[in-house]
Image: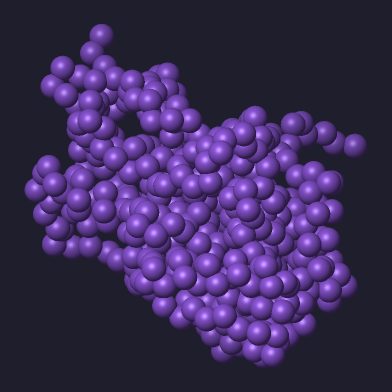
Length: 492
C-alpha cells in the first residue's frame, strides 16, 4: 500500500515565539513550510508563561549570541510588532539596590550594558527613583529607558497566524515521534506515530524538548535542564501603583534575574519569577513556600502592594543548559546547522532574552543559514498585518454603537471582569490556525483572566465552542490533550 507523504522545503518543530518567528520570516519567500506543535495551540510552552519583557541587553555577556540577538531584537521587535499590529510599550526599568555593595553590582551591569552598546542607561539615586516610580524602597538603581513589555503569547500567536496567512501550514496536535534521513539527504518526520512528512530543512525550535528532538536525528547537543519560575498576578486595581518594571540586583547563582515586579498591558502586575530546578519538564505547579517568598520580596520593594488582592498564581519553565550542581554561570544560545546532518538546524537553550531576540534569530536562520545554501526569492504579494481581535471595551461609545449595529453579538457580554463580548469570543473560537481549547480563547481575548477567574464566563464559552465547533463539553480541553475540563454530564 502506497503511503501519501506530504513534502515541504522546511519544517519547523515548535510553535513558540522562536519557531513562529522563523515561520513568519520564511513566509516572505517562495518556499513551502510547515510549523508543527504537539499542543493544541501556538504559545503553549515557554512563550506562554514569562514576564513579557523586551530586554534592553545589559544583563547578558558581551560578545555572546545573547548580546548580539538581544540588541538586534530590541530594534526589530517593535518594528515587527508595529507591522503586525501587536501592542507593546516601553515601560522602562529600574534595577534597584539597597547597599553600597549592591551599587557596585549595578555599576558592573552598567559597564556591561555599555560594552553591549545598550542605549539609555544610567545610575540614579533615591530622589530620581522617586520621580520615576513613587513608593519604591531603594537607595540606588540602574535606570533603563529602553526596556519594554509585550504580551508574549499574543505576539507568538500573531506570528503563527500571520505566517499561516502567508502560506505556512500550521499543524497543531502534531507531535514529532521520529526523524530519519532519506537516501537523497532529505528528512522524513514521523507525526503522532501515524503519518510522515518529508522536507529538505528541519528547524528544531522545540524549546524544552530541543535536546530530545535533536536525538531523534542522531544529534547530541547537550541536555535541557528545566528551571521553574512561579508568579503571582495582582488584581488590576493595583495597576495604578506600577508604571515601570522593577528588578532587584541579579541572582548570584545566575538562575534568573530575581523576583521582580512587572506591569502588563492588560493592567495587572506580575510578581516573580522564582527559580527552581525541577525533574519533570512540564511540572508547572505552584507552591505555598514560593508564593510566600514572592509576596515577602515584593512587599519589601513596594509595601503598598500588600493592600491589593492576588487573583491567580502560575508558573513557567526555562530551558537551562546547565544544572543546579554545575559551576557554570552562563550558557549562550545554541544556534547551529548540524555538521553531520546538513539542513538540520538546532535552536537550543533559548531562554531570556529569547522573546526579545526572536525576530533577529528568525532573520539570521532564514537569511544566513537557509539563505546561504539556497536561493530565496521574495513573494510578489505578502500580507504583513495580523488580523487581531479588537478589544471592544477599549472603544468609545460611538465606535461601540457602530460595531453593535454591524454585529449584534457585540451587545452580549460573556466575560464581565474583562468586558469581553460574544463577538470577540466567536472570533477566537474560529481562529485561522484552528486552535480549539479554552486557553486558545483565553489567550486571544483575555476572557477568563479577570477577578473571578472564569467563574462567570467559562460555562458560556464552553457552550459557544459546542455550538460553533460541534465539540461535546466532555471532549473539550483546557490546553493540552490530557487536560479535560468536563468528565461527565449529569442532570439532577
